[in-house]
Length: 59
Image (cartoon, rainbow, N blue to C red; front, side, top):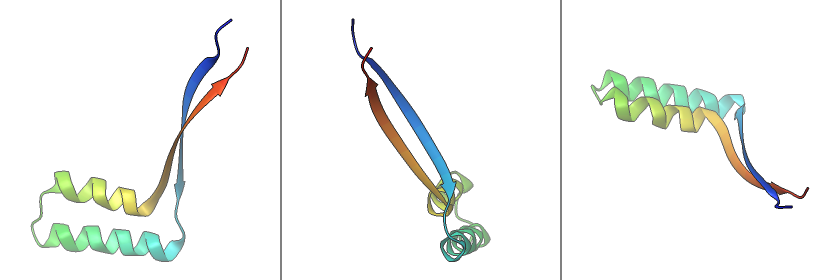
């Protein structure tokens, strides 16, 4: 039998000071007329702790 491979994505909010910094930075960039396509994903990467893990399970 072949081992099974999977991917898990964990998304957790960061601590409050880092989340406030990401939100404030995103708001400032939007206020300065930066493109939303760049600002929103960048702010979300700062606010959330995103981990992608690849795992292999033996059967």
